[in-house]
Length: 274
Image (spheres, rainbow, N blue to C red):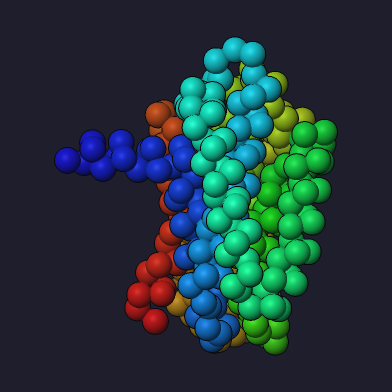
């Protein structure tokens, strides 16, 4: 039974469906924290947009390869390229139609984010070491797009929560590039780790984990806005730290991706109990 569940989740992960779901859950999380209403169509548009970006990115990587990809994710996108491309086009059309039903302020802010998405696809193919940072900014911006469009009155505590979330997302992407370095080099994919090496990436990761620890302490000592929200984000980072410390274990069978992407589903706990 457990094997079937894991096998099913692995397909969900390869297709980036868990990433899209995580973005929607995190957006709902921040909507709760900011005490704003998030409409279903806006949430659905966010999920579709995240899936479109991730799938387009994987398909572009897969198309560039002349040989079988080193990673299971990219091999899957190579084998099912045409089918996934059709799904991508359909999803894009649905997303464009759905945009007309979202709130005007969200639509206007979304246009700015769409411009940044275009820059991401242009830049990340040429300046690979910025891929993780740009991906972090886009993901964080997408998650916060609806909540901050509706309520942009930010307290110091909220700003720290946003900063903590953004750094956690950056850790996630850097962690993947750190573990994937050899396979990325084999497939001629560029990342922070392939550009600056494992040691530099490891040092950056340790620094980011330390920053999150400091932000957590500041939140608990200086603010009492929403302890549960802070604990939720801290739990996400702790699981990423576990992957970092137990790299050899999580590298097997791409366990690091399954858990690393799943941490963005953790805010569902906050949503259910608060």
